[in-house]
Image (tube, rainbow over all chains, first blue to last red; front, side):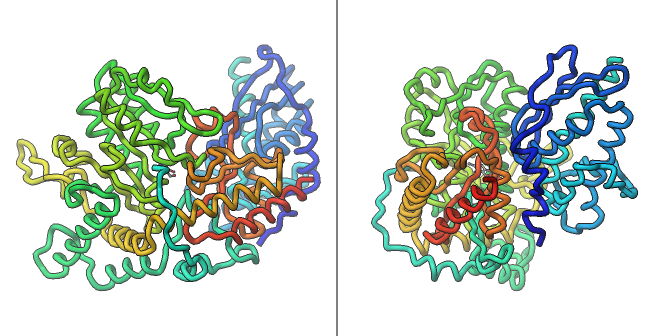
Length: 168
Length: 418
Ligand SMILES: Cc1ncc(COP(=O)(O)O)c(C=O)c1O
């Protein structure tokens, strides 16, 4: 049985207690996207600015558990200042890490319709080292019901990028 | 529903617990502390054995075969119906008990049949802010389809319905849908009073009894409602079966729910003749094993006595509220009525600024199972300005040691998040 230390790494607790990039950017010009976790009712608001193909600024608002809040905080720190294609790669890698359980845990959280995992058909080799601090969230896969918490902000960010591209 | 005598004999929880095989297992190296019976309760041997016995000795399809065991199966199935009906005081149990998949489906049956037959453009229906989504969404769907307006009975800060403006809300209303007991706040609602006012205004009353039937005596006549729905799996029975009770004179007038076998008397190329009640609402092969299990659950509850169960739960709820408040002071906020006599043993709480997910996760490490989330009552969550709560719910097999384990694990959660 996985222990709590697998889930609540020190970095996660740190980002939970002192979240980075909290707040909302003025929208417009910023893209504003809301994400919902229907399981627990948590809501997250991602506002981001894309300038010259780069995520020049990002802020996170809303409420959630330590996993969703720290994942959002870590995400904001990781993507700020990065070119959009790199951010997209990061989203893919992160969600790849979160879908590992699909192939290795036979009794994952069954019927909750894990759309997150669908996008990655073959669990390609995931370069977890490239995730830096985000790798701290790796332990979440051992707690399948919490995966949605960890991926909420990432799905919301992806939606924000789509929005800004459809406007460009 | 709150005026019950709590004079029954004391429950021998230690002995009774031996009937529940699941309660002997361990979780993360700790004995399980199951505090989520409001979601789904555990089943005693008596229920499991009855289902197994039926499957091993009697199973055949019901209402079809002429041969012996088919007749026996039908008899056991219909006996379960009557048994459940008597348990809730149905005046005509053989006709008024409809087996559905769960309470949710029971409520949907009312919306589809009574609702479609009686609600039209511009009609008003009345719900309360504390309803489970199962008693909101079917009405919203119908409201969209038919152009109905929905009015809401508000909830006060203590978790009671605000009934001061009830008469106004009821003017011209055709239907009132109300929960007997909130699955979040534990509040026991004055259903009889609401039903009387509703009837005086010409409205029909639908009661969601998913949380009340498992925990207190139920008498549909005393409640004065027209429909009442509940689920077997919250009252020591199996999943896959629920009950809708309706007044004979209303059910008799209603069109069928789903179409298929069982629900017809005759089918010609030109059309069909619906069956009598209750089968009119039970298209297809019903959950037969589950009905037998539900019947056994009713026997089990009746043997202990609903008054005794209610008395036990009042005393345990009192202990839980007192000890949690004493131990955690301002760090804990228990939602719902402060007086245990006004509520069931459902304790939704906020603890410091910890998220319910995190609370529940840490509690699980200590074998303590509580629910975290919005409990399918989002309008109520919004009313209290929270996204989610942690919820510990008590049942007949819980005792003070379970509450103590909850409090200890909660301390650990507090220490963990610093
Ligand atoms: C008050 C209330 N109504 C309805 C339901 C729905 O029950 P089921 O999911 O068994 O249909 C529940 C169960 O969660 C409930 O607590």
